[in-house]
Structure formats: C-alpha cells, structure tokens
Image (cartoon, rainbow over all chains, first blue to last red; front, side, top):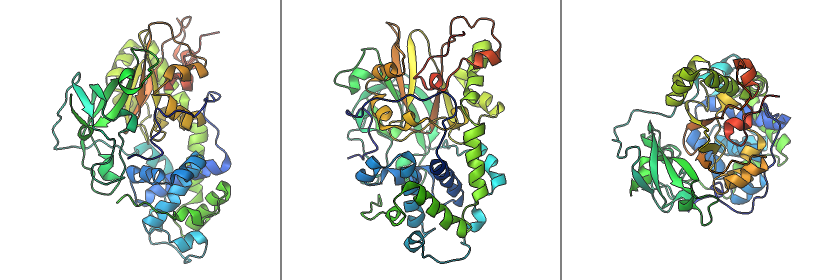
Amino acid sequence: MTRVHDMGGRFGDGAITPEADGIPRLGDWQARALALTLATGSLGQWNIDVSRHARERLSPADYGRFSYFEKWIAALADLLVETGVLTEEDLRGGGAAGVHPLAGRAMKAEAVAGVLARGGPADRPSNVAARFEVGQAVRTLRPAANRLVDGGHTRLPAYAAGARGRIVLKHGSHVLPDSSAHRLGEAPEPLYAVAFPASELWADPEAPGDEVVLDLWQSYLEPA
Amino acid sequence: MPHDHHDHPHSLLPPDPALRVKALETILTRKGLIDPAALDEIIDTYQNRIGPQNGARVVARAWADPAFKAALLADPMPLLTKLGYYGRQGEHMVVVENTPETHNMVVCTLCSCYPWPLLGIPPGWYKSDAYRSRAVREPRKVLAEFGVVLPEGTAVRVWDSTAEIRYLVLPMRPEGSEGLDEEALAALVTRDSMIGTGLARVPA
C-alpha cells in the first residue's frame, strides 16, 4: 500500500557514517539543486505536500538509485511539467523562447532572506473538534494509506500502522497532507504526538522501555 | 489521482546530475523564472550563515538560565522568534530535554525533515536510507555507530518527524562545565547532540 520512501524499520541498509561537526558542505551541483528547488517554490504552483509527493512518486528504481538531491531535481522537473510551467519540449531543450508569464514571480536575490525568514506555517484554524486528550490510548489505522486518493500521499508510516500508543502532545490543528498533496484543500484537523512502546512496533525491540513518537493527524487515529 | 507516470518528464533531461541541474537552471533562467543571483544568495545562506551555531546558542542559554529553559520547553516559538530563529522548516519547534532517565533522538523516516533555522541543512547521514530505516527500530545500535553508549536505565525516545513539527534535542549539560559563560557553553554543543545522535562535549 505504501511507497519506497516509507522505509522506517527496514532491514539491510548497513552502517551509518557520521560526519564532522558544523555546517555540512554541499557539492556544487547539490547546492544548485537545493537553491533551484527553494527558488521555484516562489512561482506559487505547488505546496510542500505536493512537492514531497512528487519525490515519493519517483519510480522505486529511480528512488533507490538517485542520491538525495538527484531526487529533488528529478521531482522538480516532473512538477514543472505537470503544472504546465514548462513543457516536455522545454526539457528537451527546444521549447519556446522569451519571457514566461510567471516571470514576475521569480524570487529576487534581495527577497531571499525575507522568504526564508517568513517560512510556511502549517497550523490553521479548524472546525474539527479534538477527540483526544494527553494520556489517552489510541490506535492507528491499518493499513497505512491515503483514504482520499488510492496510492496517494500520507504521513502514517507503514511500520506504525495498527499500533497502540498514547497521546503525549497536542499540536493544535494542521493542514492534512493527505488532502493538500492532491490539491483537495488544506482540510486542517487536530495533530498529536503519539508515543508507541518499541515492543508495539518491532518483533525484537532493543530495550523494553524504549519508545517511538510520531506526529499523527486525528483521522489516522481511533480510540483504543 | 496520484499522477503516476511511466515516463517521468525528468528523464528528458541529461542523466548526469551536474548536467541535469545545469540544464534545468539554464531553461528556467532563460524564461525569467529564476534569478541566478537568488540561487547564489540561498546557497550562501545555508553554507555560511545558518547552521548549528544557532541551536547551540539556544542550548547554552537554556543551560545557563533556568527561566529561559522552562519557557523553551513549555513553548519555544516566542523565544526562538525573538532570537531571529523563526523561518523555513522551523515554524513549529518543540524542544525535548535529555535527562538521566530519557535520551531523545530525532529522525524523519519518510523524507528528511530537519529544523533548518536552528541546525542549518542536514548532514548526509541524516538523509541516508540507513539512518531513516534504522533509527526507529534499533536506535541503540545507531547511537553506538556515533560512539554513544547510554548508561543502564536510560530509555530511548525516538521522534519520527512525520508532520511540520520540528524537534530540537536539549542535550544534558556536561560535567565540568560549571561557571562557564554562554559562549563557552555553546562551544560544547555539537550539531549531533541537538539531533540526539551525540552528547555535548566535555570541557577540556
């Protein structure tokens, strides 16, 4: 039901290589890919959920073989064509010349600091009443899947589907990615941090008292 | 509709990543859709200005000032905004405190969500399949690969960043740091200690 990006708990990935402290240094094209992705956000043709889903929709073969910023740049090219900003002919190098109708929205150097500082908050007023209180036992839906769009974007990882946990934080109401990623509206609803004992998630947990906490929307949860 | 394609448009660009990025930048520049100077500015911001030194200042102040620490744990956004650390990927921060009883550690299994205004861009390992897949299932083995072995009796709490909430770990103040000022304390705070894959440095 889920996609290749949903890898929490997977076996077989090998060791992790720590890096020196401080700001990570990017290679030239990686830095360019990062900046292109951030700058094209100002064209206003997608939101963060649409953009995440574009990366997740890369074919499993591409997702597996692409490095991090190769995923970003491939998803950006796909989004630019899907939204009609560019044509396939443009990507082939033969598109129309001249200034684009959206050129007025291009991010200028002097606007960068302001755009990054403003961010994009995801909390919204909502008329969906909170069903759960801190301390309450809940169970996640199973399977982990978008209930609005078959194969669509969701933020309930497969490893936490059908698991019993308890509410540890109430985050207010946030945009629902399952809706927003498909341009079906922001559909804000209550968001909670939910703690799950490791023994609820894994066949062979490392230690009995360990926990994993996930941020989960109210519609992912039922009382337990 | 999830818009799955069998022929993704990206395959029309050159396959080599450096050439691919260059090609897309050239197309977008020619049409006036991006300003290359804005790209330079974004890169300068995340390579030279915004980084873990921001988070380290917050942690150092929390160690030095109990009232600041209490407010930071209760509701960090007013304090972080005042310090100039509000921004993209840090709109909804929660600070979680390490104690002798609980060690906190942060991951994003579904992508690579990370608190950019406080820590800058994420290191490569944070975005790796190995960290994303293993941190939730075997955090203690992952910690050992960073050289961290927790004392008996410390529980691990892993925060999987599945929404727009971003988590910053407040590491334990190291022994031997009594009497240090905030600047000296900040020098003990590593990036990894604020992700939870490291501990703060012990003063030399």
